[in-house]
Image (cartoon, rainbow, N blue to C red; front, side):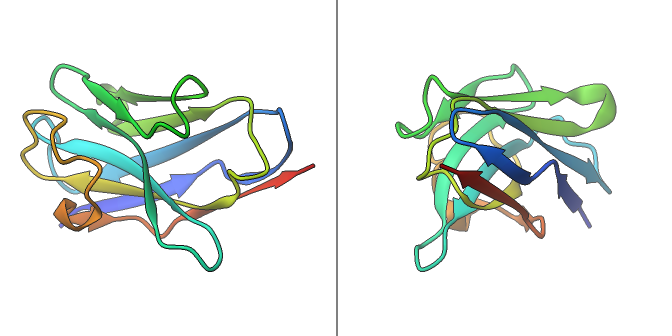
Length: 127
């Protein structure tokens, strides 16, 4: 069983930055991909970014490209989402997810392909 615990959410002004963390435990993750998704009130959950543990390939949604950076610390089994230049459309509950056996970035934006999910962390942006 895999446990994912997100942290780092909070309130920030528009234009500001936050760094989210996702601590993973319970398995070895060398063959996994880790993703971040978000869900705003009244909207469906959407893909934000993903990283493949082995090799570090990354993939971003167009809406966050150039502003958000996903990275991983293998020694700590932790994935980060650095969010810069936050906009009023970024507030949501941000979820970390793990996908077993991901060799490429193909399909990493597809929510149903992920095997494990965290509980989420709230990000609020004030204008």
